[in-house]
Image (cartoon, rainbow, N blue to C red; front, side, top):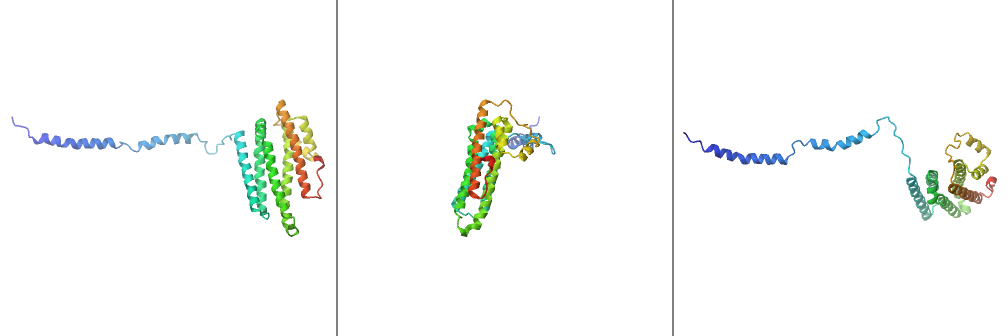
Length: 263
């Protein structure tokens, strides 16, 4: 019987390292690289499916009272920084800068009122009303200081230009606090508040309120005694602030008669 050629065994042994090397390369390389990104995209696809369809209206989320008050405090700091900048520059001719204060203050009023009527007890603890009033005092003081720097005859034109936004600020502030008392009376229905609201309202304004369709829809029934006392105190302090605003207007325009319903 003929011997097998020796070369066949050696050739098989020679091919073995080559196959092992190919196996190592196959293990180090992913079989289907495109499969991994597909798995990674699944969470995004789920998130997209949860979004509302085009044309579908998403229900607005009610703001949290703490978040509203936090935003109000940020606006209060912005107002303080703007007033400080005006005092450093001492440029009373920059009338738009003073009008900018009124815009910031209007935003602060809105946020403070939202805080007050979202959670009255929380607002009382955070001293929201006093914070808002001190913001008015700050703006009023800046106007008065600026007017004192332009009292000379040479600056009469500039004085008149500065008085215009100042008087507008006082009028808007007075209307805001009058409306606050009316809304407070409408919210809680306390007889003393309703009397105060009628005292500061003209007959025409009363007619507008009665026809506005509000009809006390946001009124709180069965007002707790603690809230009743706080609301009465708030009304009392607001009337004092209204008196201050009238006095400021009289000091600017000496020939202007005071509002009789506030005196």
